[in-house]
Image 1 (tube, rainbow, N blue to C red):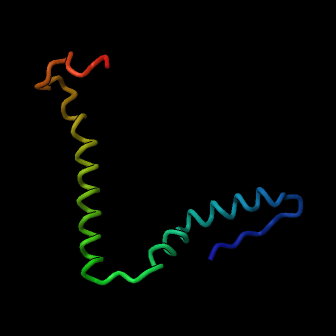
Image 2 (image 1 turned 60 degrees about the horizontal axis):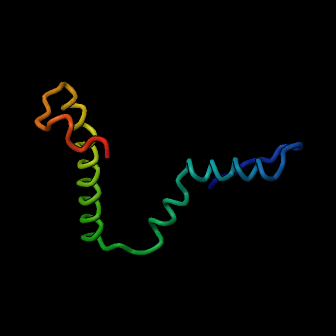
Length: 83
C-alpha cells in the first residue's frame, strides 16, 4: 500500500504527484490488472512463453545493427536512402 505524508506548506497537487509516482514505482496498478481476472495455468504458461519470445526478438533486433556497423553489410549504401 502506498502512503505519503502531506507537509504543512505543500500543495495538494504536489502531494498527489508524489503519490502517483509512488504507486507507479510500487507497481500497484500493474498488479491490480494482473489479478483482475483468472488465467488458467496452461494459458499462463503460453503467455509467459510468448512474452519471452517477444523479449528475445527485441534483444536480437537491437543487437543486429551493432554487429553490421563494421562495414560488412551486404546491401549497397544507396538503397533505401533519401526517401
